[in-house]
Figure (cartoon, one colour):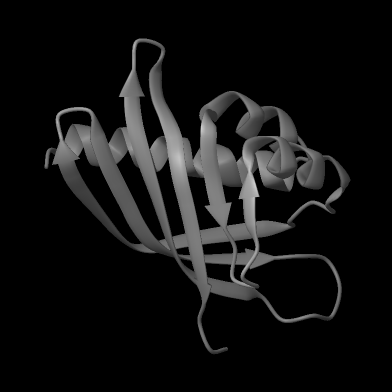
Length: 124
């Protein structure tokens, strides 16, 4: 695993979080997810790309986020996973969402694309 790969995937992950903070997540994830990609959420839902795009177009934005404990696993030359602890903060009194998160990326001619995202909520 190279620092270059880790940094590139972390840049993509941060761009995703930024899109969730500025209410452009539906556009970002519509573009970065492979056509058959899925997201497995902490509540047990498994969402395909079209469902993710529709849900994010109606979701309230996050106020802020933090990414820590980042690990990058090179699967092969064209596939890699980024694993980290993500914390998302919304406006309002509810506590932050803290989760163990993993994103599996596949390199295409157009660049790295998201194949699978999975989150597990961590105790607060």
